[in-house]
Length: 607
Image 1: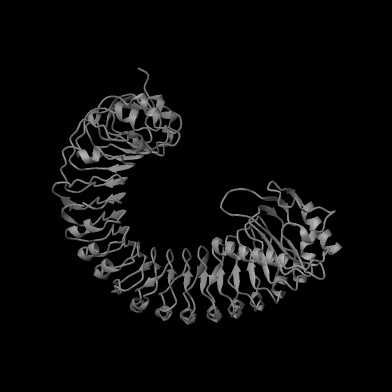
Image 2: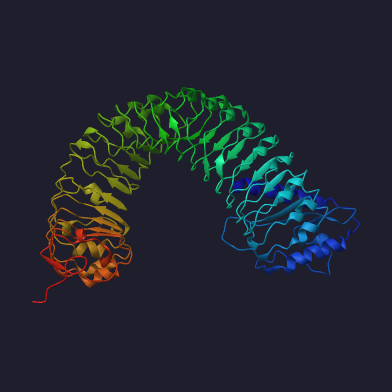
C-alpha cells in the first residue's frame, strides 16, 4: 500500500512541477491571505531538521516556496505537497498541524505525507475546501475522528489518511464522495462498522481499511463497488459471513480479509472472479466447510491463503495450468490426499499444507517442479517413503515433513544447493543418513526417528549451523570431543535422549550465541561450569536426567533472559540461589536431585 501511495504522491509532485514550469513570464504574487495561512502552519511546526520549510519566508512570494503551487492568474494556492521518503526512520517535521491550511479556499491537492511527527486533528472546516480532489494526510500522528463534513467534498478523488492515530467511526455518509477513486484509512484505530453507504462508491478502484478496530459484518452493499480492483479489510474484528455478492465485482484483482472473525463457508460465487482475481487472502478467520470445487477454475490467482481456519474435506484438484506462486492451507482440518498437480505447477514457489489431517503418500510429481522454494507438509498423517524426486528440486530452500508417519531411508539430496532448512523430525525414518554438503544449510532437525547414528556425521560437524536438533538419534559420543564448525553461529542445539557422555565445560565456552539448549536424558557428568555466563542470550536450558553433581552456581543468575530451566533428575546438591531468574521456576525443575534445597523446594536444614 505504501508503494501505491508513494507513486501517487510522486505523480502529483510531477504534475505540480509541470504547472510551475508552464507559468507565464509574468511574476505571479501569492494572495496575502494564503501566505498568512501558510505562515501560521509553519509557526506551529516546532522542528524542521530537514529544512523542508526553510524557503517559507514572510518576505518572499509564497508561490515560490517549497511544496506550494499557485494558480497562474490569481496567485491563489492550489497545491500544498509536503512529502518525504518512507525508506528510513527520519523525522521530517515535528509540531501541530495548524487548521489555517484548511482556510485555503482554492486548494485542490493537500498532501502532508510521511512527516512522522505532526500531531493535531482534522477540523470540520475541511468542508470549506470545495475544490479539493486529493487529500493525503498519511503517516503522521493525527488524532481525533474523521469529521463527517469531509463527505461534503464532492470533487474528492483520493482520500488517504493511513498511518495515523485516528479514532471514532468511518463517516456514515462516506458514500456521498461519488468521485472517489482511492480510499486508504489503514493503520489507525477506527472502530464501528463499515458503513453501508460505502457501496455507493461506484468509481472506487482501491480501498484499504486494514489494521483498525472495525467490527460488524461486511455489508452486502459492497457489491456496488463496480470499479474496485483492490480491497483490503484485514486485521480487524469483522464477523459474519463473506457476502456471496463479492462474486459480482468483476474487476476485483486482490481481496485481503485476513485476521478477522469471519465465519460460515467460503462462497462458491468467488469463482466468478476467475478472470480478474490474482490474490485471495482469507487466513486466520473461523471459516468452515469445504474449499469450493469451483475454485479450480481460478487459474489466474497467484497468491491463495486460506490457512488458520476450520476448513474440512479434500483439497480440490487444482489445474497444472494454475498461476499459483504461493499456496497456503496450513492449520485447518483438511483430509484426503495431496493432489499430484501441485508438483507440476510451473510457477509455484511456496506450498504450505502443514497441520491438517492429510493422508496418503507424498506425490513423486514434486520433483518435476523446478521452482518450488518452500515446501511444508508437517503435522499430517502422511505415510510411505520420501520420494527420491524431492532431491531434484534445485531451488528448494526449506523442506518440512516433520510429524508424519513417513518411513524408510532418507533419500539422497544431491542438488539441493539452496536448502537452508530441513525438518524431518518425528517420523519413522531409518537407514543410513545421506551426506548433504551444503554451505547454505542453517537448520537441521532429524529428531525422534528410527535413526541410529552412533556418532554425529562428519558432514554435520563440518556445517556451520544456527539450529541443530538431533534428539533421539542414537548418538554415543563424548560431548567434549565434538568440535562443530562455526560454533559462534549456533543459536539452538537439541541433543536430548541420546547416550552422550562428558561434561559441559567446552560447549558453554565455545557455543556462546546459544539461546536454546536441550541436553536432557543423556549421561553427562561433572559440574555446571561457570562458563555458562558466556551464554548471555540463553532463554531455554534443559539438562534434566543426567549425572550432574555439585551446586547450582550463582553464575546462572547472570542469565537474565532465561525463561525455561530444568535440572531435575541429576545429583545436584546445596541451596538453590534465591534470586531471579532461578526463583521463578517450579519445583519440578529441581526435583529428584541428591540434596537440592531452598525455594521452591523445602528449606535447607542446618545440621
